[in-house]
Length: 282
Image (tube, rainbow, N blue to C red; front, top):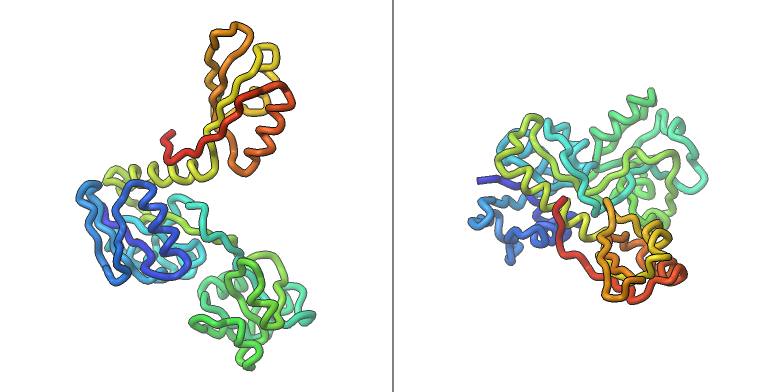
């Protein structure tokens, strides 16, 4: 039975559980459950602190897990990233009081507060910057400068609203770009269910990014229409009773769906319909 570690709370937990549900796996209904067995899929889910997922996976206690890339790197676990999952995206950045620092070299001899001390230490070492101290905090990092325990911070930044409220601004390039990832042990046996899990997750990711688009177009305008909607591989073209027209079925990007429909209409396509995709396999 495949053993999977899932975040039990926080920003990763709900989205991870929803992706697993859409992939066909049972998920807990009670947030107090620590273990759930999905007998139909031969999977056992363990609900752990997000910071602990990489540790358990790296130690081989569980086969695979879902966590953030930032948490994986900070854990110094032997676990490795197997698949980016496309949600919980954020930048991990330095920030300081507005106008005080403009480049990472300004951190030399300064106190840097963070919840990710290993990640920050490694990054600064790689750039030959020696801080006065790396102050480890467990949350509420933005308050550390105002309270006098740090000169700058390093933290996950999504919108920047919390930073601005604390009188801080980001500077320098992002330390890393993080998102939720599927992780495995370094030499995991992918045949024991991990490959199937990954395929299912990829199917959900694809379904979230694409729609199935159907339309009718004259044979004369077919090449122009297909140039607008090349799809993943190649559109399906079906003849109609009217020999001068064909039906086209193709996958199109959700992000540009309405723009694509406008372009198709301009070249003469009609009956353009976009349908949501629940899951996919490629």
